[in-house]
Image (tube, rainbow, N blue to C red; front, top):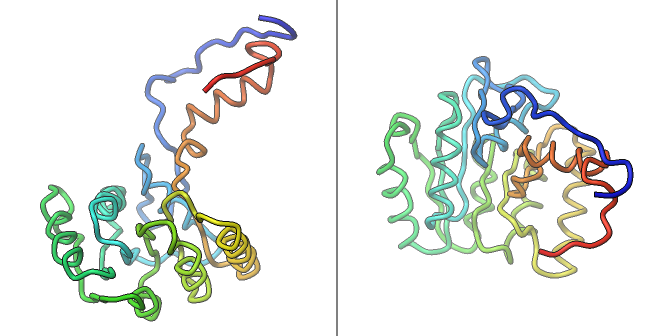
Length: 217
């Protein structure tokens, strides 16, 4: 160890670190070490929080179903009201899988189903507050743009794009969301939200292990 190495004591309760999220609903979203809970916490933006967070899922395969499970498990104030997918098979199997998980059945209140390449556009015309973008990443830029323009909060899986044009679109949508001041966007880079990872990086930057001269992944 070289440089201005410092000794850190383990913070109190370090083994029990869980994601600490900003409250959204009147009851708050509590602490959940789950990816979708970060989505919900991100909705604590400067506007009145609704009594219920209405969620729409775009992309109904297993990753999407798992994302909904995590989201609905984060708080009793979350409901799934809409689903959309390109393929009818996914529209059938995804909701079945979601309903198979315990503890969330009373929060599954699907009343909108949209099928086809333009299903995401129909989703944006509903009363959903939050959309989960769980499709393959090629579609992410177009879906995010539509969501931001419609004033929806967004969780989108990583990667957020697959080419330069897509990345430019993502950046433009992010800038529009900032200008609106009403839209929260969270991507699936959950390590950036995990207190353990954040604390580790902080210590490295503070010199806890000295000067970094090389690295290997």
